[in-house]
Image (spheres, rainbow, N blue to C red):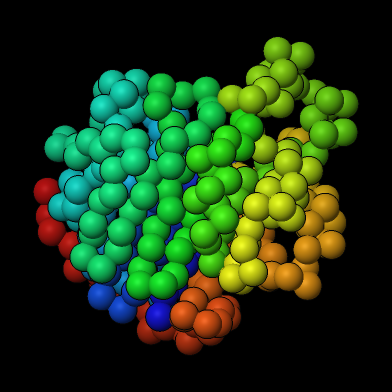
Length: 276
């Protein structure tokens, strides 16, 4: 059984959890370590299982908590060397592990595939995470989906997929022109319509769950994103990843998927972490 959860998703911070009964990894740590651990605890996710953190690119909404997370939990923080060089010095982890494009990284029973992509960062990546026969993709911050993204996305049973903006809201909104052009460029973000096209044309019949992610506060709404995807709702479950709280935990097995029921938890539960 595999559990996935969007701990945070949006321009104010991003973090995605993928774990089984023994091991878990995070993709991005764009909010504070304190908030990540708090939200995981509220969802019934055991942070003591975390074995690695993967960073997609150097923007602060993706690695704000990376240094403290690596130090607090004594787990490796993976990123590309160019991402490390491009990050603010105070956000850089103490002992990063660098990967290269097409490299496969083993974390216990997980295999993590870095997926190079188009975004306005030094060396941006998305990730496909495989556990046994289950593949989970974290695909956000993509200006235009290249063949590499489409290939890895097509293998996934579950996706965190960017659906950042509604075209009409963006072009008629309050952003200055240069920022509108940047968001809509081939190194910006995916619109609702672009996300729909990817899901409609480049996924397999085994896709069971999509979390629409990195939804803009100013240029999109949850309702518009869901409305765009409505024609696909009979093919797979469609959920929203929030910028303000963790999503529901979704459980995946080899042939099925469902939302996890979180029991009432005792108060004052203490998580065990090494001190620093």
